[in-house]
Length: 44
Image (tube, rainbow, N blue to C red; front, side, top):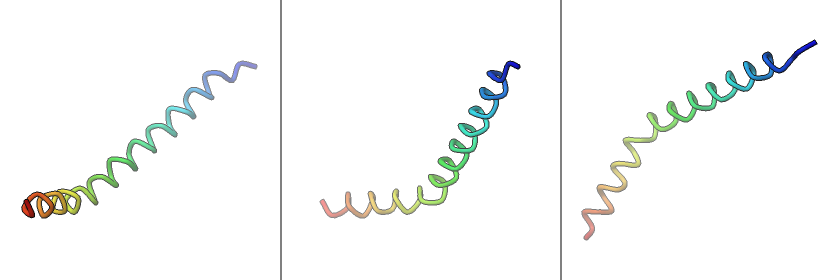
């Protein structure tokens, strides 16, 4: 039985999930990081 196709699909799903979680995390903390950088830049 050939299971390479199934394995490739499973890896694709895992990669898509990791990408989604990464984008979601960056969307949540992005504004806070931007504000931190603005505050640090205004110190100079």
